[in-house]
Length: 259
Image: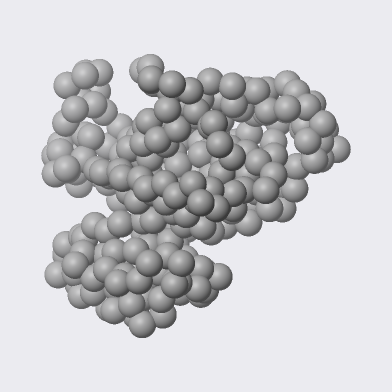
C-alpha cells in the first residue's frame, strides 16, 4: 500500500489499523532545537479522542501518545520523530456480524477488490482512527509555526448552518459544546438534530470551517504545490471528506477553508 506519507520538507508517514496493537507515525524534517510542549500535544489528542459525548462514537480510548525517537529532554534532535498511540479498546467481535458483508459508502469493497482481503474490524487502515497520528504531527507543526493562529469549528450539520461570518463569531467558545460550534443556539439545534437522526439509525454530514490568521505571503510553490492545492489534498485525504473550498483575504493575511 502506497500513499502513507504527506509533505515534502516536513513529512509525516502514518501506520497502523483501527484494531491493531497501535497506530502511530514518523515525522521527518522537524528542525532540531525546538522545545516541544508534550502536554500541548496530548491536549490536542484529548480534543480528538472518541467517546467524549453521546453524539460521537462510543469507543473509549485514552489516546496517550508515546515518543520513541527524535525528542530528548523535551527538545527535538533533528532526527526522525517516532511515536505511537496504543489501542486499548479494540472490540473486534463487535464487527463479526459484518465479516461477510460490505458496509455501504465504506472502503470495505474496494479494499477487498484491490488487495484480495480486507480488515473488517472497524475499517482497518481505512478507519478514521488514523487521523490521531495526524493530530500529533499537526500539534508539533503548530509549535514552530510561530505567529500563526488556527481556529476550526463546525459551521453546518445537515441543513442547519451558521448564518454569521467568522468575524462575527466568538471563536473562543467553540470548545464549550460537544458539537464544537461557536454559536451556542445553533450548537443546540445541531445536537438535537444529530440525536434525532441517530435514533432513526441514520447518519448525517456537515461542514467544518477553519480560519488561519497571520499567514505570510509566499507560502506554497507554483503549479502543483500551491498552498490551496496542498491543503485540499490534506483535507480530502481525511476519511469521509467529500469537498473542500477556500477563500483568501490578504488584508490581514487571513485564510478560510471549509471541508
